[in-house]
Length: 304
Image (tube, one colour):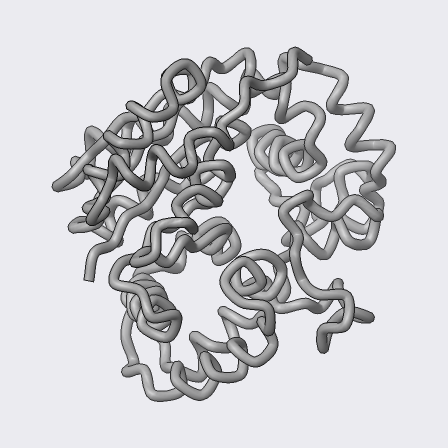
């Protein structure tokens, strides 16, 4: 089975790429999985199938905060009549975006996965992740998976060490443009807050409170607080620098077997050529045909 991971800082066209890749009939376009299953510091930990499913089906702390303050991510797709529709703060993270992007009945697929994952062997969490994505690809009738999570460059070291044979797409964009977009996005406002809190106080505000000022504590975070922080553009330039450094060092420390670097700016200028090159790298049967059929969905960004 072919496996590929798109690594990027976020707000640089990775969601668009995922949506376009969905149109390739043999590819399972997986969105927002790897960032949802952090912390990756646990990826080498050996766990049973039951422990893995408990880990996989838990709510994501960031999403719970965003739901509580009324600013869910734009990518959120869980159906209004779903099983957890009235309890979104406890929504399993794979039901928020990933599974609804693959099926109109994510609850049913969730139940199938629960049954099948119970058969997994005891193994590392990283190995579980690969077996899970392989299973998901098989269940959806595809021959390869391509995973994309916004801001995944910050976990690039773990991704590259856990998936040494995966094809890697390194998607880049000018930091200034990315930072401007991040500053207006509640998810990235929260990411920046977490990175800053860990750097300044040594504490992740979504995991603990000791040593944190009250305004940083998860239970006290408000939409207004995040919006106000978003007014300081320099915060997000710093976030871009941090994320990029993580990816750059990871590519040196764990050079992938196959690497394709792709610039957002090139995609905007010549989408057919950029997408054809991407499709060829990913092994699409008709890369040029796919690129030609979806290129008109690439639009120049509206100036901020």
